[in-house]
Image (cartoon, rainbow, N blue to C red; front, top):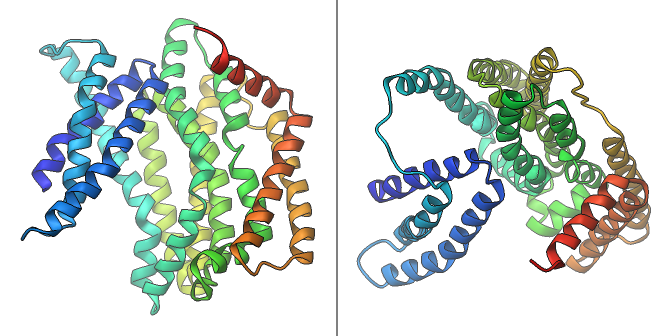
Length: 369
């Protein structure tokens, strides 16, 4: 299974990165979406098939993903629109010079992403329960960085191209930061209003302690929504050494501060350490970019509009929650829907940028080719 997975996943991830590197971010996203469409039915089919045989049925999950990746590879290759060629010595030297920073940076980033869970399991007596609470809160806050991750993919390519052609990309970076938190801010303020109701309704009373972690991780996602695009912009300047130092800094702060705060305050401590570590990455990346470019604005009117709309949403949902206690899924969905309507409505009313983006998206979707 390991060989099967590596043979397909390594090739797919490489080709997918090349598609993004050509500036075809949307195409890469659609290819990955198509792979997901193939993956689910293939996994279900393989699991059902293997469960009736002597092979462990769970192996079907691996085979389904591997086959789905292989099926979309030809499309990804076509989108790259380049033929393989033997690299020159200069290219190999350049690649090796980049890899000596990017590989340690990737390893540090992977360690950083899972360090909280490792610390909770290792340091606390009830580590298993704490890890469960953390994972629940982590899953609830995942949508907060969807926009930031998508925008960050394109930002690296855009910054690299503009830096070579016109000497700067401050507007692109500022514009990305302005809208990167468009989901992170309402999720943070929504967690203040409904964290306990969300956790208890979805996972049950046994996970009640995850509510406070939900608020903390939502705050972390707000910072990550800003630091993620900044790191992509740093990579766009062909400075993997800076990214590596920032990644190592994050791991160091998270490890040292995480051990101390976790032993002192429990699971909340590890979340607080992560917020501090991510804030250090944000400040370091912003400082580097401001040294390279003039006009990078970390705070903007669209961002202020998002925070303001989130605050109003918090007040409305809190008042409604006080009047309508959450006793079922229907109550919870009603409050979440109310918050979404309030947030989107206010944002449309006060943000010309959001209205313009929405209008252009609708016009592009329904206009004839």
